[in-house]
Image (cartoon, rainbow, N blue to C red; front, top):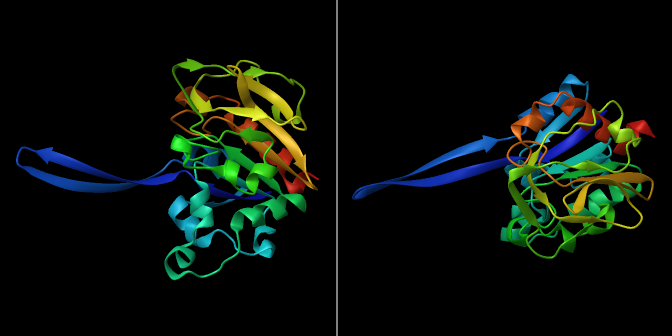
Length: 249
């Protein structure tokens, strides 16, 4: 199985004020490690595009996307995939890469979206996937406003379909999460688990392919360290990718 994984990166610019003087310091961070390493240990080939690289290099051609069995999007807003710099600054017409993902799934590919501040609706509705072609593909209805549910005290998901294939070999005792995106499973989707009064995991057939929504982070911070260290962490993500993957059909 070979997947394309985009997101889970950011740049930070901070200002340090020391009396009269101040300095600006910048750094870059990638949070891909836990899930990428877990999948690679399970034999999955992972091509990773951090967000600033995905803006340039996420495929524009269906034939290139078809080299993969599934696409995993995590904490990467829709604008990053919609607005290539050649379109924004040079007014060039380019293919809509979210339409491309929609066609990829319709023809048999898989799509997984994980939660985060730049997933689904996201922080301040800046991720805004509900206004894109992926709103049709994903197994959940996306709010048209900030959908974050912050749970600093921790919250546990509740499994609704114990015998679903994504839960094969998964212990029933789940770790806690520190937040999630508020989602509602579509009527035609399978709601596999909920969290609070909201959807936690859901999957759906779309055309000849499948899509999957995981409403919390696949890595810290909403995905707690207890989740990342969970003995079933690798198995869960392998199961999810297998379920949506072209390789499993």
